[in-house]
Length: 500
Image (cartoon, rainbow, N blue to C red; front, side, top):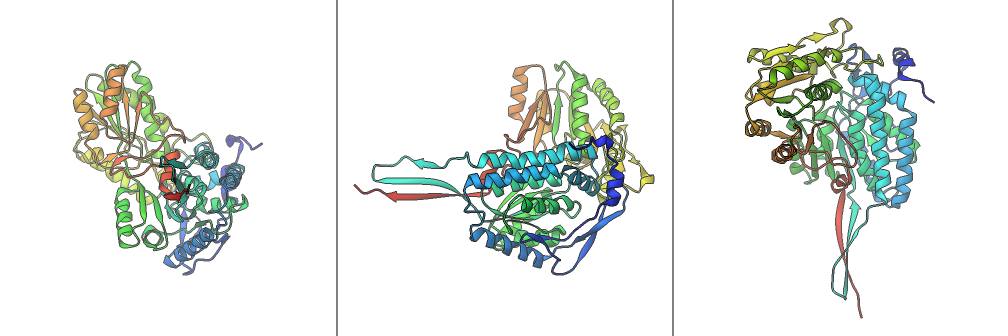
């Protein structure tokens, strides 16, 4: 039995950690072809924790060739679904067995609290892999209705080589959302993790091999987006790209597909989620606690963070006071302390970005209710206080753009129609939440909101059984659930003549 997180000296384990930042290609760690590398810097204290290969087009090409060879010879793609299931279930068990190591890597790499790396990220990663393992031998193909002289089969087949490009905010979970359905369907994968958080992806590849995944089926090339990421998206022998990241880079993914082989591109992009609170809701304290917990979780570095809080003007003052009372419990702390609930931003660049938005909010006339300052400056890390702005109007920058930090904006509305209008007046449509005690209003507003997921009287209720994705510039396609198989499979129709 593993020790309680509070009983572990995470700082001692961090000091003893040895980092291997080499690519994982063809079932083993290899040196980067070009020999370039970059320092992996921990946002906790700004120290270098290791050297990581700066993958180039030559490394991507080697990984794609390895993945293609594995796909074509059928070592994985031709295995029966039940056989793939056994390997992936073993992979999930390996992840859980290495949970403390993976959690430490995740926290050191991107700054989230160790309790959440351990209890949320590792657990969710294993659960995702296991879910798709269990699903793959329970999906049936189809037989179309035909006349007596023919048989028409409609079958799903693996696509081939999948390029997966994942962000830095949930490195393991986002990797699993791509790997689970892609591997379960029989594809080979080349994963390019963010240069800001590459460590757990490399370790996952080793664990998959230990679990029985054949060599070459799962490859990882760390590197920068404009180098390794671009090379992967432009590669002529990659059949599809599963990308999670910014809308700006998502547009580039579509361009790269057009400039190469018209590979399929599935983008899960940004968000500016609206949290609507109506005056008929009878527990404002619970609503305030929910939005604060969801907004400041993961330091606000979540695409579905409820950063726009829309409150009816008749209850706005009371609600803002309740929000202010919630802020102190989310003060930034040492991510390696098992009791910390909000950690560090991922790097110095993100710190500057978030502080720039805070300055913009002040300059445009929003009122600071809580926070709005850098924190823990003496540590050398990248911390920001949980920040709440009141008096925000829809045209302000902090109300329009995705901040990706612990910054909440409170906007006031007069009636239901205005609330829906403000909520939908965004290029994004990832998630939303409606708080009302009237069932008719809750349904009416939920239907009117242009978002991929709408919560009613709660937020962040989640499960692998439901799809995740958004409307508009929040992307296309869906991660999670059985719908994710649509992204990584081809539909083939086979006609058979039946002679009398």
